Image 1 (cartoon, rainbow, N blue to C red):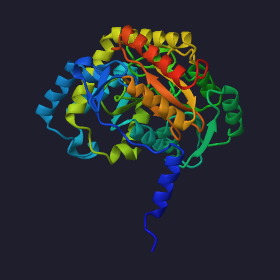
Image 2: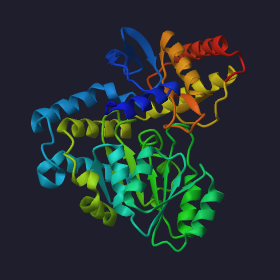
Image 3: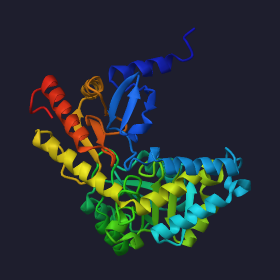
Image 4: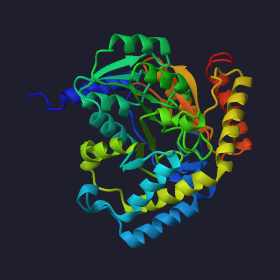
Length: 398
């Protein structure tokens, strides 16, 4: 009799042949390095592959705030918020988030995936249409699928294509435009001002995920929408605490009718246990640091600009965007894995990103810089990258 898991073995073999199999490495942080360096299998590595953009994950004030909250409120959330899990720290955080984003209300979710799936599925449904940028995060895609609304993808940042589709689907009950503000794998920005104009022209609703812009862009880190002065033209603002905040969780900011609806309809919120008090306590302190420590945003922008400039000077094909996400296009999956391994051997942690996270044939190394990297560290990293490039393929390969 055939083994009952033979189909899984066949699929696993196929993935390995295409260099699509995955495994993780155990990472040991070097706390004194503020997250800029890590240790893997006893080897010290410059960390160029995480979302701890401002270096706050190891900030002692944030760690200590979590410890105080745990001592007072206990280790776990103990229940969903609609049962008995809504302790006062939650109310404080949501009030502060609403003030920070200058919106009527806010809701905290367990993580960004649950925020996007829960919000979209609660606000859109049969008879509606959701227009989604083709490079939107998987959580947005899954939220649209769960909503049962018609899912219409427009070409990445292609406003003419989006307007054509808005005209085509004018008869739908409700029309949502959903986009990331900074795209996680390409590091480019959505044309938010133009999207807000299309929202107004076609009577649509607009949702923007600020996951990679929250804490990083804007006068107080509110995000790219606030930096551009068009946040009041966005119906739903989503963001995470797992990136620039250095903690965990996610939030949604909107007007009260939206917040009230989500509180009663967002299944990922209703049926999830409340976050542990330590997480909320740390997040409150992280929000304070983001609002006040403007030097971190400035340092991040300078580091991103420096890293891009040095790579371009060495002949790497790098885009001219100004974000902290800097992808290096490789193409083939095996080649990307090989490049990542060479980086590891030379003391740099930078992970190969492959399908289905990115489209077929576009495997890449996704570099992310941090506010706590030094110019000397980034200069050394570029030197090592150049040596690897020249070793593997010759000067003009990337």
